[in-house]
Length: 152
Image 1 (cartoon, helix red, strand yellow):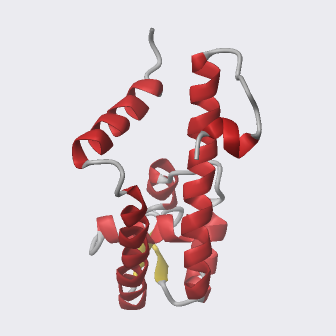
Image 2 (image 1 turned 60 degrees about the horizontal axis):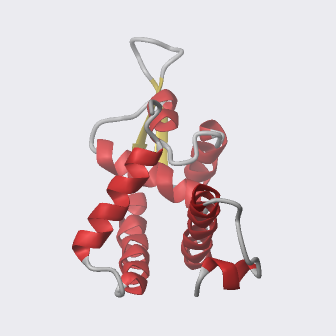
């Protein structure tokens, strides 16, 4: 469905404003689709993101700073997210013996198994993109990268 129909708005003032609104609207749609599916596993989108970061580091530990730097939503409270994952047995946390201020976080086997399940959610979500071929998907990704560039 076209953005104008979704939002019941005839015009947006400029093609750039329409594009910006469309990017935000579509991003929110994707997050909602993924979040709803994650509820069955008792984790949030941000918690899944932290687990994915830790899987990328595995078997090496990660620090809170590293997690925060790699998160999709960098305004999330990484400490609180790790605490919740710790309560669920999905990560371990230990104080670094060389530097007591540094905390090492590692994903557990249970966390790795959960990610295998949530990976299928993303694969199923990708099936909703059947109207876009792989080359177009690459191009859209490149356009998104260009949008985030600082200089004009």
